[in-house]
Length: 323
Image (cartoon, rainbow, N blue to C red; front, side):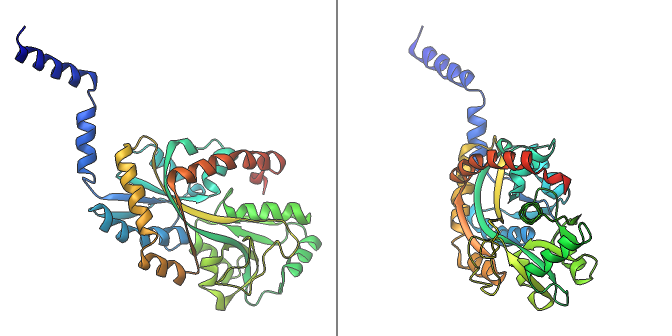
């Protein structure tokens, strides 16, 4: 056999041994080949949607391609997450996430996704959950609110964006801590919640401090569930300082389908690490009373996996779908 023939056979054998390597490498080098979608599980105008719209133009600059936001509301974010879990894993379809829903939805019901269906890109912000009423509400303090609930079990309504969301779990924990029962009312997103409270269709809502503070002149926030008072709202007490050992917040981030090529995932993670430090992103978040909190994707998902058992225990002790 000639040297040339041996060389050709060796090259052919290498190609057969790794049939997907060359196309995959070429695909990675060309990415993005089309617009990158960020799928949001809530309606337009809510906090998660606004996060995505703040990220999109800044991400475009760093990946060299267009980024569009697509809203697919429903089931507390499950509809959007399930669609991305099933999407082609090529880096062109991403999803926003909300904690704790990313973990609690698959625990609470037979969901169409699980954590391991995704690869973490980055967590980008944290937004403490708050308990809020209309500015003209008779409940001026959390103590007033709890006393009324004790006097009339299930008479007071509490709205949230979905079962298993941070806003709903705040209610679950508060009911357990105070031996009260509220009637839980679900809406699809922040704008509907705000409209319901402002229109006095519900007595109260669980909604993050950011969107609540943007409408502070029409609302009264009784307490919030952060670890400490917010620098944006030092006037709002924490549940902890009021005697309830409850911490709850919406951690919002970005994920890709689990089988996304490592090189594409690395580019996305690098780009998001730059986006969250961009002065424009920081300015936008602060204008919305929201704290940027960056956590790189792999470290973020390691932490989330460690939290799963705690949520399973909470489910067994106080099933949150029983309101």
